[in-house]
Length: 427
Ligand code: HEC
Image 1: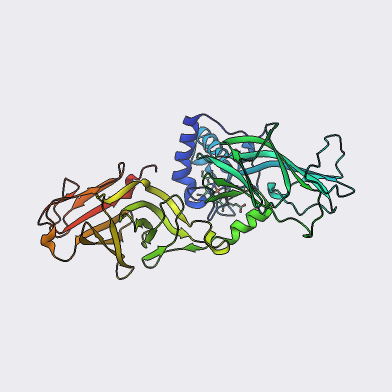
Image 2: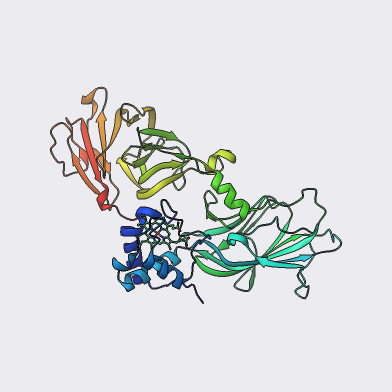
C-alpha cells in the first residue's frame, strides 16, 4: 500500500506539533488551505502517497512559494508530519465506478443487483468524488468502490440528501450496512472513525421524470446539523457555494444566528483581533469562545436555516463549559450593540448588568461586567463561573487591583476578566 495512516499517537502528536508550528501558516491549522493547497481533501496535485508527501515536503515548491524543508527539518520530522497529514485525510481515495445498464425498467424497488452481471462501463472517479451524472443509460445500477477516510472523532453519518425512493446499498468492509434513518428525503448510515473499504450501489430502475438524480452526499455530525465534508460531486459544489464568511477584521460585529455545537439563542461577538465569543440570551452566559474568523453563515443561505453557522477558528472553550454570572434564576436580554464597543445589557436576579468586550492586542480578550442602575441593590456577593483550563486575570478595571476570587463583593461595581489565549486549551 502506498498510503497509510499511522495509529501511533506519539508520531501523530509530533507531526501535529511540527505542522502547527511551520505548515499551518500557509495550509491553515485545520489543513483546509490558504496560500498553500488544502491538505485534507480528495484533490492531490502532486500525489498523496507517503513517498510523494515526504518528497514534496523535502523539496518544497520554491517557484510556487513553498520552501524545501529538508534543510529545516530532520528526516524523522518530515515523516511524522507526512503521517499526520495522512491521518487527517477526509473523503475517498482510490475511488472507481462500474455501471450496469438495465435494459427494461423493472420498475420495482425490489430489483436485486446480480453480481454475475457484466458492467457496461467502468472508470476512475474524477477527484475521488461520487458522481451520479455519469451514466448515459436510462436505467442502470452504478457502483462506487473506494477507501473512505473519516478522521472525525465525534460520531458521524454518511448522509444522502434528496434520495426520494431510490435504493442505495452500502457495504462497509464487505458487510452490508442498513441505514439508521431511512426516509423519503434522507438516508443516514453510521460511519465509524477511520479508514473503511466502501462499496455503494445506486439503483435507477424505476420510471423517472428527472433526467439525472442530483444526490448530495456528505459526512455529517451526529445531530445532522453540520456537513463535515462532502463525498459526492454535487455535495462538494453545494458546500463551496455555501461559504459566506462574516468577518470582523476591521470592526467589531455581533451576529445573531444559530451556531453549530452551541445551545440555541446564542449570539456571536467578533473583534478585529480575531477573538470571538458567543453569548447565550437565555442564560446570559458565554457559552463558547474561539480564536480565528467570526462565522461562516453560508450553510443557512440556501437551505433556509437548516444548517447552523460555523465558527471559523479554534475553540478556546465551548458549551457545556460556560463563563458568566453564576445564577439559576431567569435572565433577560435587554439590548446589544456592536459600536463603539460590543456591549450586551441584560437583567439577572432583578439586577441589570452590561457586558462590554474589547479585543485588544494580539492574544487578549477583555470582558468587562458592570452593575447598572441602583448599585446599592447588590445585597450579597455575586459569583462568576469560569471555564477550567483557560488562563484568566481577574481585576477591578478602575484600580487595576487583581481579584483572587471569581466574585463581585458588595460595594464593587465592575469586574474585568482578561483571557490570554496564548495558553489555549483543547475544547
Ligand atoms: C510559505 C507557505 C508554505 C509553507 C510554510 C508550507 N507550504 Fe506546503 N505548499 C505551499 C504552496 C503555495 C503549495 C502549492 C504548490 C503548487 O502550486 O504546486 C504547497 C503544496 C504543498 C503540498 C502538495 C499538495 C498537493 O496537492 O499535492 C504538500 C504535501 C505540502 N505543501 C505540505 C506542506 C508541509 C507538510 C508544510 C510544513 C512542513 C508546508 N507545506 C509548508 C505553501 C507552503
